[in-house]
View 1 (tube, rainbow, N blue to C red):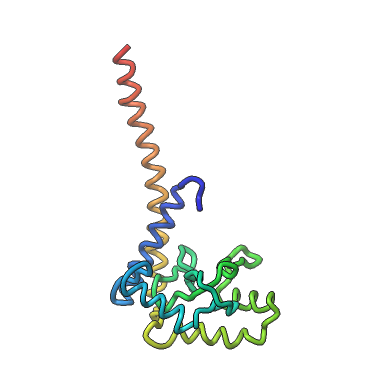
View 2 (tube, rainbow, N blue to C red):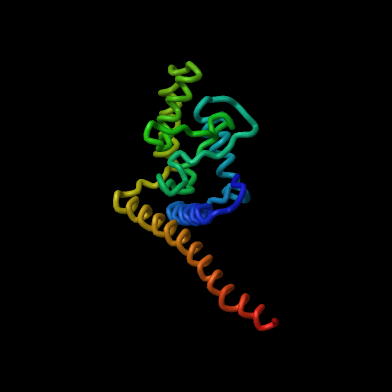
Length: 190
């Protein structure tokens, strides 16, 4: 959690809101995991698809968290969609980064966890379970064309850049208004 809010926080929130709307377009309705049918779908994914276990380490937990397999951010542009979410325990919900500083893919993260836990024999079965969830059945993630992915990327980048620059522009406007009216108003009273 941020100690203070920045323009980047607002821009990231706007990108996630956009990715949520695009996910709803492909799903055909909103996917709010906090209430109603979205919550029921999340529970089905968590308990029936993944058996109440972390998709990475297979640990059973009552406190499983939501993981966007294709990350829900301005770098990977993963949609908020039932086919892109899986349950993870608190320990596994911390994706590492590679040498270049880029977050690991879900598959690289799974490999790292299986290696760390000395359970590489279960890597392939977990990988196939996640892939099946992403690609098959009623929760399948949309098969986006290259053009669709590029369109999402371009719009998300534009949204991010516009929000950050508008925040800076708003500060400049505030400074101008303060200079023109507030300080001028104080000198009128003297």
